[in-house]
Image (cartoon, rainbow, N blue to C red):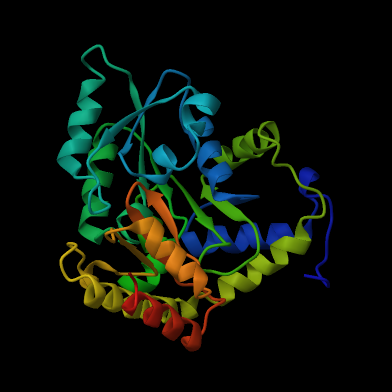
Length: 317
């Protein structure tokens, strides 16, 4: 980062940012990409580029873009979310088709389908490739683009054994966070058609995301893309945490096999007391919904840290 070659990214003149954007677009099989400060901003830019005020977006009721972005979609883009059940992370193609059809019956016009891979709220589950392709066919038949919230797309790639470009192929636009499992300190990217990314540059500016000598942080993003292979370690650590949770509470309806990547989501009997117990032992966790606890593994951990967490789970009140 200290040695990064920099320029003014607000004018497209930062060579390190440009290399990062080109590299990301190439890895995802898209024409162009844009570097932004956060995944939320990337999602919001996609909404602004692919919809108009009053349009509807078909998505899951627990998707990040609906639940965890402080109502940004309706505020920033004037869209309505038509939500379908996504208990296991995916949107059933039949439900998506029905939601699209609603636009022909005096309901909001559907302009976009938005999916999340991996799906955080269901515990980092990834979309089966067949489900991705089914929703893609449904959207294409209606002439509707797909936006992929791929905050943890590289986790999905490692867990599925399919390249990021294959995972992202059904989507018109796709975003990925460099600051999640890939381990960079800051930043996300939005990729898609070249003309749309030109528009996205303007929308980034409107949202206050224009940056100057951003090569300092983009350099870390380039390194993050080179470190993607280590995500298998995070997944193995999460599997250990999942087994510890199942051993401690065998009757809470938690199935370790459902933990496919680096996120463990479950409902202990007393979440607040459990999190306080973890914190007292030096382990951080959080809730993502009433009664729902999330633990995430990442590059800053080691085997000793995971051992500590598993031990604390085993002794939880």
